[in-house]
Length: 348
Image 1 (spheres, rainbow, N blue to C red):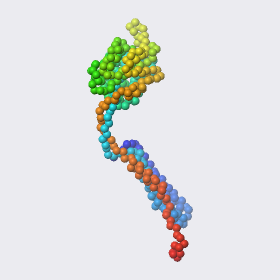
Image 2: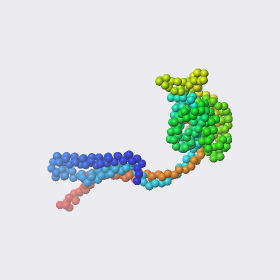
Image 3: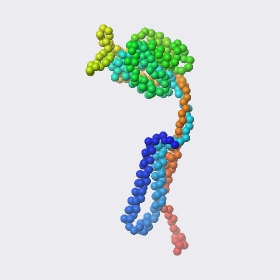
Image 4: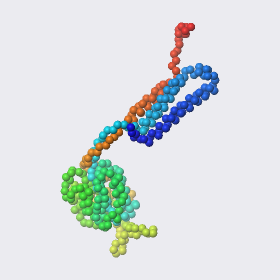
């Protein structure tokens, strides 16, 4: 025997309270009868009331309360094997962790805002395998494809510019690493028939040439490219550290402060076969990716078997309702037989 909601078993503490209430009511009735007058007179006046029926009615309510408590706890017994097929697409999320993602034109900064939007996206995905790639001037697989979204969140939390010492932003490196995460050789077709999607979150400042080559490479591997632009098109400074309440901003070799802005053109060119989303200061269209993924062909990743208990709450619920119904239908008055005049003459 198992319980679906074992915490609800505390409700059974109400059962003895109900029984005590009925016992206290009976004691009060006896005290009132004793104050009313002689016991023989009280018995004659209350001859139509059946104490036994009252006890039965109280028993029905107490037992019905007990069964209702058991019903709320969700009794389960016996097991059955369930087989569930997992269907979805393979989605690699490529997150830009270059220094420019520390810009604060979106709160708290571009990188943290992108992380928060990814977490919201994970809440809306159902059955898709998700992997995480981080990139700057280089790239590596932070989390391989998995259906464990909790693991993806853990790897996402530690994504930081310090993990990639190579400066810059290279979309080609992000795609090449994503293809490795898909386990698809570059240039090969989708020999397993799986739907694959790559989501690149970046501010679009690509420091390497060859966006068209990246798009063609993705097409050759049957990978649908989606992009999300993080930030605002107005230029802002890049904070690199804070010391003593002072913020130090990134500077170039000439000592001038470097300003970064959202470059949407590059991201839109990358997403010409998929869709482009915008993560702005006060809004985000990234949740629309879920609908886009739904339009892709689903792939069965495999079947999982697990044991499930059979719910048996119906039986105590039915018994409790029956007992409470009977309690309402049963009267505490005795059944009396009316005597006719002929019966009285015969008695004389």
